[in-house]
Image (cartoon, rainbow, N blue to C red; front, side, top):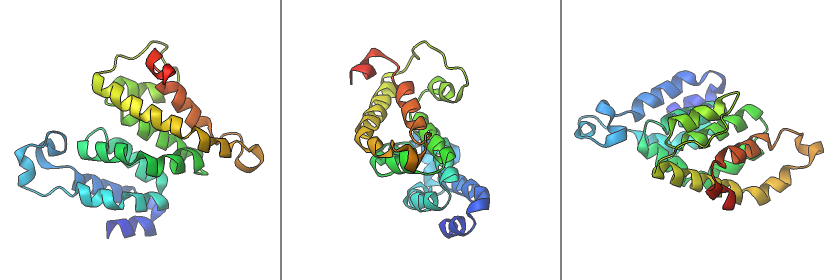
Length: 189
């Protein structure tokens, strides 16, 4: 029902995403740690995740922005977005006609890396030139994202026609690739 409301009212869908946030957040932070508090009230994360891509077709900016916030709070959402990258990455990061949506898709990818400094650095106007200190988990996620970006390289070739796609189509994609190259390891991949 909420998914249908988002589809019908795509311009003013932000309150619906706030409802989705309430539905996916478990009492006592169970989305993060899996405590026994989740037994008291049901968590509707699985149900919401089944419909979120339908909502993303109608209002992609709001859906991707909501996901970027949720992946930092909820491990189930994090693993779901990370594991389903191949189904949404090209469509929202490269192929979408709206630059704002492409930027938000890029930020969603950056949000998947469990490092606050890494996330903050992506939106900063002046990026630091030093390598961020990433945990093993953060490095593993970063390598998974970087590998997915490299797999998109042949598809990106189709968006280089300036007459058809303009000059800004691949800006976010290449900015993200450069940002994910934080160490010698990524440069060698």
